[in-house]
Image (tube, rainbow, N blue to C red; front, side):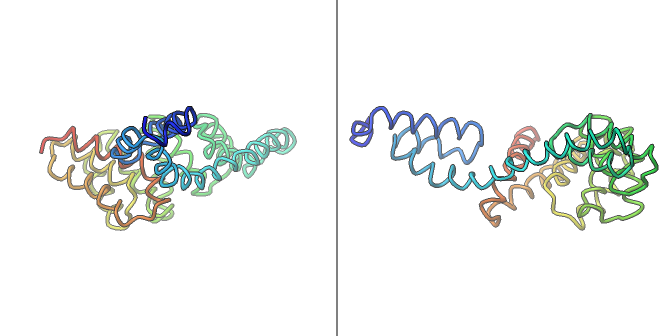
Length: 245
């Protein structure tokens, strides 16, 4: 256990346990688990200062959920008296932020039925559809958003449209849209969707190139961005392992 572990037993073990739980949930660089295990409480303390405390900044985002849910409850009441397209669209946006995709999609349906023709409303309904696995329904909504503004949402719209084309078997349109997106955008989501598309076409070398581009961004990113991008880094590593060298 070591001198430090003996002095602070059982708190040293609790410190290690907390560090390991955080490691499993957040999945930072693999070497951290060796530092936590082999250096004992000291390693856990180093890990907490290096990884856990900076992550606390991300927790601020979760606190935004409280006023958001309060606003959702208020909008549901307001819609009974005023089922306007604006109220439905705002409700859809809030549900989307909460990750409640089907509820968000239903709200956008009602907003559009109430004569909302804003590109954002169609775009967000398309986002819900593609994330729910309904690429067929996503295509016309994303097409509308991209037609009105090719750079919509920093070119994420055209990237998702390309992904929807790929999922619906429209290979030529997918290729053209992906090319348009990656020329203007550096979104990891777009790079990895493009890599998946290339892999599905048997273009493994190109797929590896685009997956590697996601990992290549990591060294130059500030810490808070690296933490936010971790799911994309993991997905890139998994894809690279699956693709033949």
